[in-house]
Image (cartoon, rainbow over all chains, first blue to last red; front, side):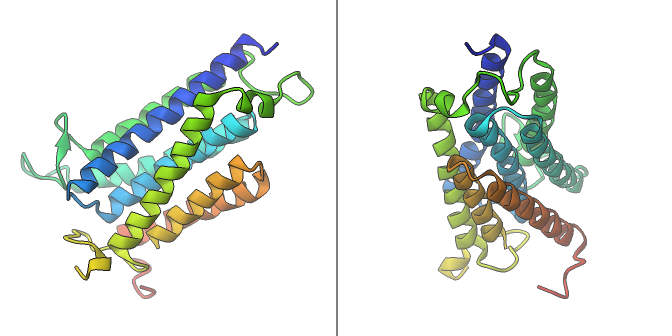
Length: 190
Length: 51
């Protein structure tokens, strides 16, 4: 019988995976409407994927402090990038800033909020009593993984969105440096 | 470079799903280090002589 704390932590890890992927799918939708991401926007996505890797480790391999550590390192990296991005545009006049906005905030501001929320959430996750898988207990991460369809779906979705971002980044930037204000895809000669 | 980092992260995710934790951790740290290096490059142009 899996302890209630571990079951709660496992389900909250799946929820965190969904919450971290939602802005990535939203950003993809914005990109497909023609609003190309800048280099810092792409770096913020990399920070989100670093967070996601730690969460997928928790879901697939068992909930361990080291896996939370990977996610927190990714969130701190992403927060530094998003913070830099916000500060770059902090003195812009109203209506300025890079790209469009969602609910009044630019996507890089949302990225900063997402990273801050994840750090607060990971503090809560680490405080759940019995929320960590320990060696020698009765938890089998493999059985838990094969018994949870939502966990499998959300993890495969994470791989899919990461591969899509890799292809789009190659199309936009090629193998070198992205332009600061991209106007078209590199692969199409823009 | 950004496409390369995304690719390393996708490989890390696939390795996690295949339960190859050590290799996945290696890919994770490689991608995070490259992300920081590339961010530093964009923030300061300090690697401008390379690219």
